[in-house]
Length: 370
Ligand code: AGP
Image 1 (cartoon, rainbow, N blue to C red):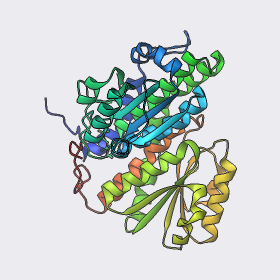
Image 2: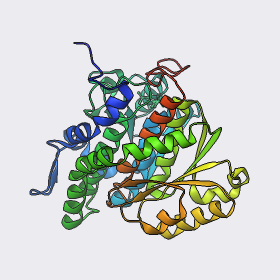
Image 3: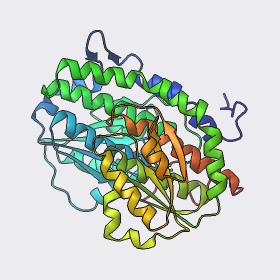
Image 4: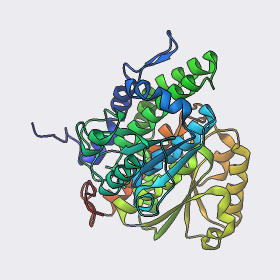
């Protein structure tokens, strides 16, 4: 059957609005707070490999690479195992050192990305165990993997990935918790706490969609003529900044750059003047004070500050020119929420500029050539 837009102007908007359901679907049946248990048969199948692995390498491209980067932070924190994140296109050509003590997680919406597929084939030949996290059932990467999980986001039609990204983040959180359980690096109380945090994500995403869209439309109108936009974040939300910038580039053709907020003073700060919008992903986390001082540094140089903040954050509220609010949550989960306003902002700026947001120029939904 044809996939319809269901009254939405574009597939991208429809897919953004589907996220409370798709995140729920990606978690459904896989976690049980009562039993303190996560069921991921793919991880069970390679549990012994994970136990003895000297590291986990996550291989991906584009938006999926951003999900991988979040997972690096989460897995290292919760599982105390070394994680490396690789661009598939680099990994496949640079003769990496791989052995049968490596577990490779491939992240891919389509499961057909040529660079990712070949990178995996090479690693498999060298003895690595391949775990595929893909959205499209029966795709090439799914078939090549030794084990894996599907993200269950449903078909994604918009070329810019939205719901597939948050589904990847959700399942990567489950994978991290499951590995932590296998390795014994998490206690029961913390495990239950994270399950409850994840369980609350769909309704928190719904809250953003119910309460922030009008404000984000207004912000989109205000900045639709920008020539450059800088996205800054730290820690778990550093990849969120990269993903926000990629979404804007794809959909609006505005030059955008994502950067770790503290790295800004090593170069990009030279770009800041009164014409530059700077988007801070500044949700409440353990180093919130640090990003507040980064905001002050930009403000002192007259940059326009747009901030994503946790509900009730008066301090950043007073510093910023414009605000996008998300519900409070644990910092480990925050990228799942902070992604949503940035998707909406890119979408409404693209629409404001009169562009074909579902089919941006020069882009294909899956890149099956190198
Ligand atoms: C995302 O908005 C992009 N269109 C693109 O970066 C994409 O994420 C990348 O090509 C990877 O695709 P995959 O997840 O299907 O492997």
